[in-house]
Image (cartoon, rainbow, N blue to C red; front, side, top):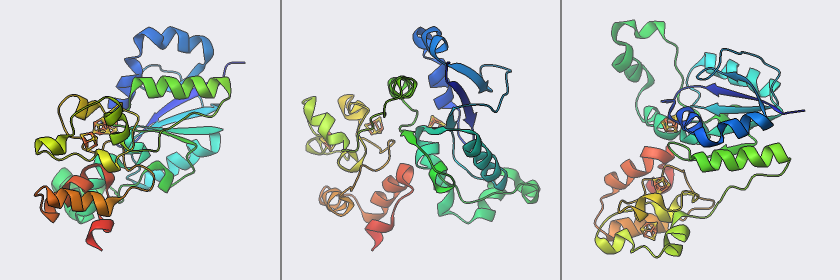
Length: 246
Ligand code: SF4
Ligand code: SF4
Ligand code: SF4
């Protein structure tokens, strides 16, 4: 029997879902091996008897909390898609401002009608089995994880920093060119896409395992960045700043 697969979206730009729909060359193959029973962007079918749930977006309202708990109850395996779902991503910028002010920016005098919560990654609310990182997530990562799950094997997610992939590619380090790059503390898996295209990493895959944030901060200071600039960079995708303010 084909595994039944569902896709759900929470707070995000839906860019990760579009990445899936961009798998044009693989979509027919995918459909031979799985049955899609819920996918708002691609089908009107809505069933709750899924085995694998793929979830895009962060949790940011009380309604989201109930919904993700219900999805977790139904799914045997839950996989997050992209930075918003896996780490909170850009959405966590909201958490650095008072919640009421944020609501007023967006909804003006109607703010009182909209419930909101500090932004949470999905695994801050329910158990997550696997994460696909990146903003947006990479089609290749999605295909790899789907293939592994269909074959009943454990998907692989790199836990080392982007610098490893960057060095393997023989890139000149952005620091040597007087630029800043978050590669030393960011999770690899993108094949060092940004430094390989002459741009410093901004951290879209979130922190690597056991990142040496203190050392990375000192390097950035050595290269002329002020503490506030460093915090802004850490906040963009990590939702993360405690380490450098200790
Ligand atoms: S991770 Fe990026 S591309 Fe994906 S939903 Fe969030 S903002 Fe959009
Ligand atoms: S460019 Fe960035 S990712 Fe590449 S080696 Fe330098 S710090 Fe690491
Ligand atoms: S280099 Fe950094 S910002 Fe660029 S895709 Fe990779 S993790 Fe994301």
